[in-house]
Image 1 (cartoon, one colour):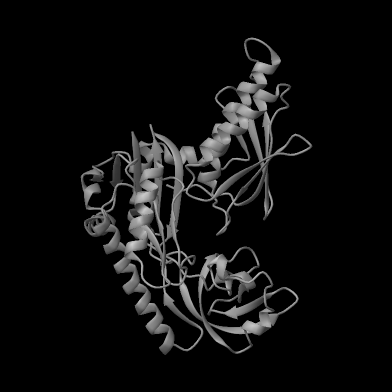
Image 2 (tube, rainbow, N blue to C red):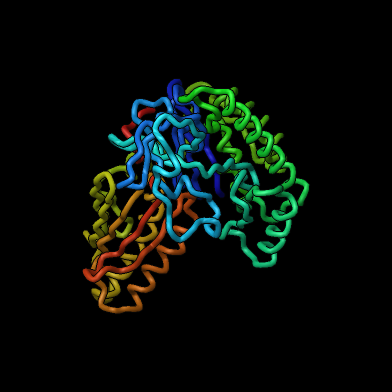
Length: 401
């Protein structure tokens, strides 16, 4: 059974997704953070234009200026972009005020990355006011359903609007999708109206908080139960589900702690699983282990057989260890929210078919990752190269109740 567990503490709201009581996803938002920066929209002022980098720095009111690249200034529909890109100083000038959206959180000493390609996610679709195309999630199962959603998308969008049908749109009626796009269209109209009145830098639209994103992004038909241990968070979630996902309401449960009974996270060993997941050395059930080393842009994972000696021959032992490692790597990347380049040093395999099976398993497992993840392939040195989109600082875990 797949459960979503929501635990409220004084300083944070935490969400864990478990399948058969095994942790697969973890999210945390501190109380003082009224939602993440990614997705927020600002009225910005251009403070520096760099033709040599085809980029500009803009002030959105944060300590560090945000970075705006030429491709994020040009029209988002690729067919409307000329092959020869203009110089950035032909499009922007110092002191100019523009509206931008955050697409990458500030990382380390770098400011946020922003774009003029606006997108507003809803329950069933993503609304883009100037994209001028219809897209469908690759996770929608059949071509007939993908075609149906494309047809509906063309019917409900207006003028240069664009929509991307999310996985949750699968099987939904056209009225639900039309209501979703109309709601987001009205949100955009309010943002656009505020942009004409505001003086830069100014926040025009803040991305939703974690409870809102829980219902909008995380709650799918694959979730069997949602348990929440805080009354206020329960009532907020219930209200949002009434508005956005009424059919999911029977899955909502309130967890009430009585006396000395274990907390929600304690009951499912979430703390222990988090502690294990964030260790530099992660032990596999077979007796093998993974070693994680990280820099700001690169993560290296070394696979070792450890105490696992197998029962037949060395190649079989190595192969089975690598398969188990691939399964855990896909899971731990999500829990740790690792981003950037990932290099996996699997144990050397003699058989090409074994190498193929390990890579295919990893490719299949990362398809369920909510963050874009790509298995690039084997390098000349026999290392497996991957990438995972990096939009915020990597998660960390330091314990706690």
